[in-house]
Length: 79
Image (cartoon, rainbow, N blue to C red):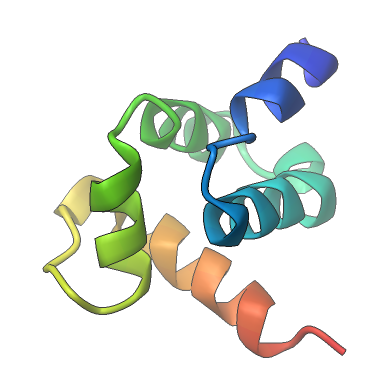
């Protein structure tokens, strides 16, 4: 499942590739089953929507709010 899920993190937009793969590599394995399911559901969403939520361009659907905030926090803590 890991390789398949990492492949799904490849979005076709470099920014999203970096963010989604970063979350997967740094947080996914230690997440709860519910959080993993939410991440997997997020991967089914359209790239423009995901990017808009991450970039503060659209309101985040409530089911993704905590996850999007976690993805944003990873980006802001990159060294």
